[in-house]
Image (cartoon, rainbow, N blue to C red; front, side):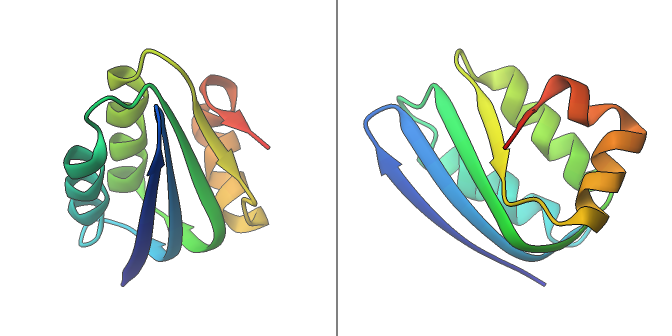
Length: 97
């Protein structure tokens, strides 16, 4: 299960993610992003309560990153999620705070 909240301010979209970002829930993130993405050039994902990410979740992150003219930042990334980002090389293409 994935809980997410989105807040848009000017060209910045901040999304808080909680739970699991996997095959079942990745479409939820994709849909929420598409609903809020008009006029957005930067996205911050607050991952303090994200406990798991799968390849489906990584695909959504890549799709979001490619659609932006600005930056995709991830903050408060848990060690288990960070390990996946590092192993897959996503830590090199995303800004992680």
